[in-house]
Image (cartoon, rainbow, N blue to C red; front, side, top):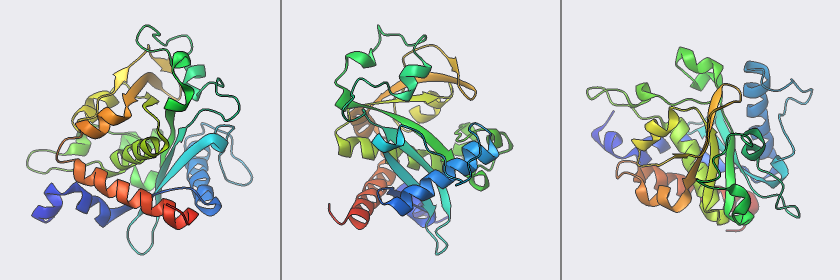
Length: 252
Protein backbone atom coordinates (compact mmCIF):
# COMPACT_ATOMS: atom_id res chain seq x y z
CA UNK A 1 0.00 0.00 0.00
CA UNK A 2 1.39 3.40 -0.98
CA UNK A 3 2.06 6.00 1.68
CA UNK A 4 -0.67 8.21 0.18
CA UNK A 5 -3.18 5.37 0.50
CA UNK A 6 -2.25 4.87 4.13
CA UNK A 7 -2.98 8.45 5.08
CA UNK A 8 -5.73 9.43 2.64
CA UNK A 9 -8.63 7.14 3.41
CA UNK A 10 -10.76 8.85 0.79
CA UNK A 11 -8.31 7.74 -1.89
CA UNK A 12 -8.17 4.26 -0.39
CA UNK A 13 -11.95 3.97 -0.26
CA UNK A 14 -12.35 5.05 -3.87
CA UNK A 15 -9.71 2.53 -4.91
CA UNK A 16 -11.79 -0.40 -3.64
CA UNK A 17 -15.41 0.71 -3.27
CA UNK A 18 -18.10 3.06 -4.48
CA UNK A 19 -21.22 4.21 -2.70
CA UNK A 20 -24.46 5.73 -3.93
CA UNK A 21 -28.03 6.40 -2.87
CA UNK A 22 -30.65 3.94 -4.08
CA UNK A 23 -33.14 6.32 -5.67
CA UNK A 24 -34.13 4.61 -8.89
CA UNK A 25 -36.21 1.43 -8.92
CA UNK A 26 -33.43 -0.79 -10.36
CA UNK A 27 -30.94 0.30 -7.70
CA UNK A 28 -33.48 -0.11 -4.91
CA UNK A 29 -34.13 -3.63 -6.18
CA UNK A 30 -30.40 -4.34 -5.82
CA UNK A 31 -30.63 -3.18 -2.20
CA UNK A 32 -33.63 -5.41 -1.54
CA UNK A 33 -31.78 -8.30 -3.19
CA UNK A 34 -28.77 -7.91 -0.87
CA UNK A 35 -31.09 -7.80 2.11
CA UNK A 36 -32.81 -10.98 0.99
CA UNK A 37 -29.50 -12.76 0.47
CA UNK A 38 -28.22 -11.74 3.92
CA UNK A 39 -31.34 -11.58 6.10
CA UNK A 40 -33.38 -14.38 4.54
CA UNK A 41 -31.05 -16.87 2.85
CA UNK A 42 -27.89 -16.64 4.98
CA UNK A 43 -29.03 -15.66 8.47
CA UNK A 44 -32.67 -16.75 8.48
CA UNK A 45 -33.86 -13.54 10.16
CA UNK A 46 -36.74 -13.25 7.69
CA UNK A 47 -38.59 -15.82 5.58
CA UNK A 48 -37.34 -16.58 2.07
CA UNK A 49 -39.48 -14.89 -0.56
CA UNK A 50 -40.24 -15.99 -4.12
CA UNK A 51 -39.08 -12.69 -5.62
CA UNK A 52 -35.85 -12.81 -3.57
CA UNK A 53 -36.33 -9.24 -2.36
CA UNK A 54 -36.58 -8.46 1.35
CA UNK A 55 -38.87 -5.47 1.98
CA UNK A 56 -41.11 -4.18 4.76
CA UNK A 57 -43.58 -1.42 5.53
CA UNK A 58 -40.82 1.05 6.38
CA UNK A 59 -39.17 1.01 2.96
CA UNK A 60 -41.67 3.40 1.39
CA UNK A 61 -40.58 6.17 3.77
CA UNK A 62 -36.88 5.33 3.94
CA UNK A 63 -33.74 6.52 2.16
CA UNK A 64 -31.52 3.71 0.91
CA UNK A 65 -27.80 3.40 0.28
CA UNK A 66 -25.81 0.87 -1.79
CA UNK A 67 -22.11 -0.01 -1.81
CA UNK A 68 -20.34 -1.73 -4.71
CA UNK A 69 -16.77 -2.57 -5.57
CA UNK A 70 -15.13 0.14 -7.66
CA UNK A 71 -13.62 -2.21 -10.23
CA UNK A 72 -15.12 -2.95 -13.62
CA UNK A 73 -17.27 -5.74 -12.16
CA UNK A 74 -19.04 -3.35 -9.73
CA UNK A 75 -19.91 -6.26 -7.45
CA UNK A 76 -22.61 -5.59 -4.87
CA UNK A 77 -21.12 -5.29 -1.37
CA UNK A 78 -23.71 -4.03 1.11
CA UNK A 79 -26.52 -1.64 1.87
CA UNK A 80 -28.42 0.22 4.55
CA UNK A 81 -31.27 2.66 4.99
CA UNK A 82 -32.48 5.43 7.23
CA UNK A 83 -36.14 5.21 8.21
CA UNK A 84 -37.89 8.59 8.25
CA UNK A 85 -41.15 9.63 9.85
CA UNK A 86 -44.12 8.20 7.95
CA UNK A 87 -45.74 10.84 5.71
CA UNK A 88 -49.26 11.61 6.87
CA UNK A 89 -48.71 9.67 10.11
CA UNK A 90 -45.66 11.24 11.81
CA UNK A 91 -46.42 9.57 15.14
CA UNK A 92 -46.01 6.13 13.57
CA UNK A 93 -43.11 4.58 15.55
CA UNK A 94 -39.67 4.01 14.10
CA UNK A 95 -38.61 0.35 14.28
CA UNK A 96 -36.46 0.77 17.42
CA UNK A 97 -39.31 2.52 19.24
CA UNK A 98 -41.30 -0.71 19.03
CA UNK A 99 -38.41 -3.06 19.78
CA UNK A 100 -37.08 -1.03 22.72
CA UNK A 101 -40.32 0.32 24.10
CA UNK A 102 -39.70 -1.29 27.50
CA UNK A 103 -35.98 -0.51 27.78
CA UNK A 104 -35.64 3.10 26.53
CA UNK A 105 -34.44 5.55 29.16
CA UNK A 106 -36.72 8.46 28.40
CA UNK A 107 -34.94 10.61 30.97
CA UNK A 108 -32.01 10.65 28.53
CA UNK A 109 -34.09 11.28 25.43
CA UNK A 110 -37.69 10.65 24.49
CA UNK A 111 -38.07 10.22 20.73
CA UNK A 112 -41.82 10.72 21.02
CA UNK A 113 -41.26 14.32 22.17
CA UNK A 114 -38.90 15.29 19.35
CA UNK A 115 -40.03 16.87 16.05
CA UNK A 116 -40.57 13.79 13.94
CA UNK A 117 -39.02 15.30 10.83
CA UNK A 118 -35.77 15.78 12.80
CA UNK A 119 -35.20 12.09 13.64
CA UNK A 120 -34.53 8.89 11.71
CA UNK A 121 -33.23 5.40 12.35
CA UNK A 122 -30.32 3.62 10.71
CA UNK A 123 -31.49 0.12 9.90
CA UNK A 124 -31.18 -2.88 7.62
CA UNK A 125 -27.41 -2.70 7.38
CA UNK A 126 -26.34 -5.76 5.45
CA UNK A 127 -22.99 -6.88 3.99
CA UNK A 128 -22.76 -9.90 1.70
CA UNK A 129 -20.97 -12.93 3.14
CA UNK A 130 -18.00 -12.69 0.78
CA UNK A 131 -17.11 -9.34 2.31
CA UNK A 132 -17.59 -10.46 5.92
CA UNK A 133 -14.19 -12.08 6.15
CA UNK A 134 -13.73 -13.07 9.77
CA UNK A 135 -15.19 -16.38 10.92
CA UNK A 136 -17.36 -14.80 13.59
CA UNK A 137 -18.88 -12.34 11.13
CA UNK A 138 -20.71 -15.02 9.19
CA UNK A 139 -23.56 -15.03 11.70
CA UNK A 140 -24.16 -11.29 11.78
CA UNK A 141 -25.29 -8.89 9.08
CA UNK A 142 -22.53 -6.35 9.81
CA UNK A 143 -19.61 -6.24 12.22
CA UNK A 144 -16.74 -4.06 13.28
CA UNK A 145 -14.09 -4.99 15.81
CA UNK A 146 -10.64 -4.05 17.02
CA UNK A 147 -9.17 -6.44 14.46
CA UNK A 148 -10.50 -4.25 11.65
CA UNK A 149 -8.04 -1.52 12.59
CA UNK A 150 -5.07 -3.90 12.39
CA UNK A 151 -1.91 -3.26 14.40
CA UNK A 152 0.66 -0.50 14.60
CA UNK A 153 2.90 -2.44 12.22
CA UNK A 154 0.09 -3.57 9.91
CA UNK A 155 -2.66 -0.94 10.01
CA UNK A 156 -5.99 -1.57 8.35
CA UNK A 157 -9.24 0.31 8.03
CA UNK A 158 -12.82 -1.01 8.07
CA UNK A 159 -13.93 0.69 4.87
CA UNK A 160 -17.20 -1.22 4.47
CA UNK A 161 -18.96 -0.61 7.82
CA UNK A 162 -17.60 2.92 8.14
CA UNK A 163 -18.52 3.76 4.54
CA UNK A 164 -22.07 2.51 5.04
CA UNK A 165 -22.52 4.46 8.27
CA UNK A 166 -21.12 7.62 6.68
CA UNK A 167 -23.51 7.09 3.77
CA UNK A 168 -26.36 7.03 6.28
CA UNK A 169 -25.07 10.20 7.94
CA UNK A 170 -24.87 11.92 4.57
CA UNK A 171 -28.46 10.97 3.71
CA UNK A 172 -29.58 12.24 7.11
CA UNK A 173 -27.77 15.56 6.70
CA UNK A 174 -29.19 16.03 3.21
CA UNK A 175 -32.70 15.34 4.51
CA UNK A 176 -32.35 17.76 7.43
CA UNK A 177 -32.38 15.00 10.06
CA UNK A 178 -30.69 16.05 13.30
CA UNK A 179 -30.68 12.83 15.34
CA UNK A 180 -30.06 9.28 14.19
CA UNK A 181 -31.07 6.27 16.27
CA UNK A 182 -29.65 2.80 15.83
CA UNK A 183 -29.81 -0.63 17.43
CA UNK A 184 -26.21 -1.80 17.73
CA UNK A 185 -24.02 -4.45 19.20
CA UNK A 186 -22.79 -3.18 22.58
CA UNK A 187 -19.17 -3.02 21.40
CA UNK A 188 -19.88 -0.74 18.44
CA UNK A 189 -19.70 2.55 20.36
CA UNK A 190 -16.14 1.92 21.51
CA UNK A 191 -14.91 1.10 18.02
CA UNK A 192 -16.58 4.09 16.38
CA UNK A 193 -15.11 6.27 19.11
CA UNK A 194 -11.74 5.69 17.46
CA UNK A 195 -13.06 7.58 14.44
CA UNK A 196 -14.35 10.52 16.44
CA UNK A 197 -17.97 9.32 16.24
CA UNK A 198 -19.83 9.52 19.55
CA UNK A 199 -22.65 7.03 20.00
CA UNK A 200 -24.74 7.46 23.15
CA UNK A 201 -26.59 4.51 24.64
CA UNK A 202 -30.17 5.48 25.51
CA UNK A 203 -31.55 2.33 27.06
CA UNK A 204 -31.02 -1.19 28.23
CA UNK A 205 -30.16 -4.17 26.01
CA UNK A 206 -32.78 -6.12 24.10
CA UNK A 207 -32.75 -9.42 22.26
CA UNK A 208 -33.10 -8.57 18.58
CA UNK A 209 -31.13 -10.93 16.36
CA UNK A 210 -28.60 -11.02 19.15
CA UNK A 211 -28.08 -8.62 22.02
CA UNK A 212 -28.56 -5.02 20.87
CA UNK A 213 -28.63 -1.68 22.66
CA UNK A 214 -30.55 1.41 21.52
CA UNK A 215 -28.25 4.33 20.81
CA UNK A 216 -28.37 7.80 19.32
CA UNK A 217 -26.01 9.94 17.25
CA UNK A 218 -26.13 13.69 16.64
CA UNK A 219 -25.64 14.20 12.91
CA UNK A 220 -23.78 17.52 13.04
CA UNK A 221 -21.63 16.38 15.95
CA UNK A 222 -20.57 13.33 13.95
CA UNK A 223 -19.53 15.44 10.98
CA UNK A 224 -17.68 18.03 13.08
CA UNK A 225 -16.04 15.43 15.31
CA UNK A 226 -14.57 13.15 12.65
CA UNK A 227 -10.86 12.62 13.17
CA UNK A 228 -8.56 14.16 10.58
CA UNK A 229 -7.69 10.74 9.23
CA UNK A 230 -11.38 9.98 8.55
CA UNK A 231 -12.41 13.29 6.98
CA UNK A 232 -11.11 12.38 3.49
CA UNK A 233 -13.35 9.29 3.40
CA UNK A 234 -16.29 11.46 4.51
CA UNK A 235 -15.55 13.89 1.67
CA UNK A 236 -15.40 11.02 -0.80
CA UNK A 237 -18.68 9.55 0.45
CA UNK A 238 -20.37 12.96 0.14
CA UNK A 239 -19.09 13.42 -3.41
CA UNK A 240 -20.15 9.97 -4.56
CA UNK A 241 -23.54 10.09 -2.87
CA UNK A 242 -24.42 13.47 -4.37
CA UNK A 243 -23.26 12.31 -7.79
CA UNK A 244 -25.56 9.31 -7.41
CA UNK A 245 -28.56 11.50 -6.60
CA UNK A 246 -27.96 13.53 -9.75
CA UNK A 247 -27.40 10.52 -11.99
CA UNK A 248 -30.47 8.61 -10.76
CA UNK A 249 -32.92 11.46 -10.44
CA UNK A 250 -31.60 13.87 -13.04
CA UNK A 251 -31.72 16.78 -10.58
CA UNK A 252 -29.34 17.98 -7.85
